Length: 209
Length: 165
Image (tube, rainbow over the protein chains, first blue to last red):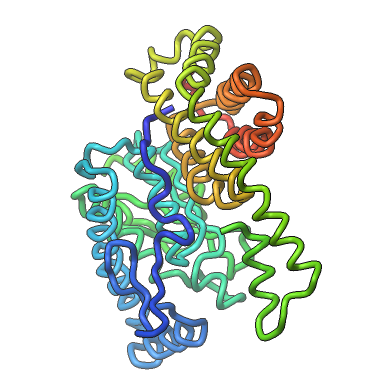
C-alpha cells in the first residue's frame, strides 16, 4: 500500500466548478473546460472525413497527438500542484490511477492500463466506452483514431519518448472493448493494418527492431 | 452532498416538498449531533485504531516491506486517510461520495502495486476490527456501513500477475 496523503484529485464535485452566471466551467486549477455533445463530436469527425478524404485518419491521429500532449502537460501541472512533488517523483501506480480518473472525468472512457508487456516496450490499453467507438455504434474498421492519437501524445509527453499508438480492437466493430498498443513509433509503423491484438503483441515481442 | 438528499432536491424542482420529503430531510439533519459525536470519538481513537490495524496486518504479512520500501509507514498514512473519509461518509451518509473521492482511485493504485485481493481485504478488515475494539457500540454501528463498503470496494481487484506481498 503506497502512501497517498490526498484523495482523488478528479473526484466528482471537486474537479469541475460551474459558474452558471458566467456560463463557464473551470477545472479546480482554473483551466477552462467545455462539454462537447454527441452532435458536435460526430459532426467534427464527419467534417474531417469530408474535407480530408483519404488523409482523414492521419489528420485525426495528428489532432489527437497534439491534444494528448497538451492534456499530459496540464495533467502533470495539476498533479504536481496537488501532491506538491514533481511528476517523476510519483509512483507509477499513483500516476496510473490519476490517469484513469482524468480520462474518466473528461469523458474519454474508462481506461485500463496493462503494464505486463513493458518488458518488450509496450503499454497495452483497453478503454470501455471510448468516445467514437461508443458514439458511432457500428463500423467496418476501428474508429477511435483521435483516441489513438491522444494516447500516443499523452504517454509520449509523460515518458519523454516518441511513442505511437495503434488501435487493435474496436467496440464499433463488435469487440467487447477497444484496445490499443502503445510503443515506439518506428516499431508500430511496421504492423500491417487489421492485425489482431494478440498477433500485434506477439509480432512485437519477437521482432528485433 | 448526500445523494439521496441531492436527488430529492432535484426531483422537487418547481414544486413544494411533500411532508414525507420534509421528514426525510429533518431526520437526516436531526442525526447530525449523534454522527458528529461519533466522528469525534473516531478522531480521538484514530492513532490507536490505525496502529492496531497495521500491527495485525504486519504480523500476517511480514514480507510486505521486502517488496515495498517503508511499506507499512506508507500504509499507515493510507489507512489514516481512508478512515477519515469513512468518517465523512458516516457523517453525511454518503458512501458513494467516499467511493468517488478516494476508494476507486486508491483501488487502482493498490492493483498497480501488485497487492492481492486477500491482502487488501485482510488489511481493511483489520481496520474494521480495530474500530470495533476501540469504539463504543453505537459509534461502531454507525461506522460499520462505510467500513464494510471500504473492504468490498478496495479488495475488488484482480489477482496480480506477480504478487508483491
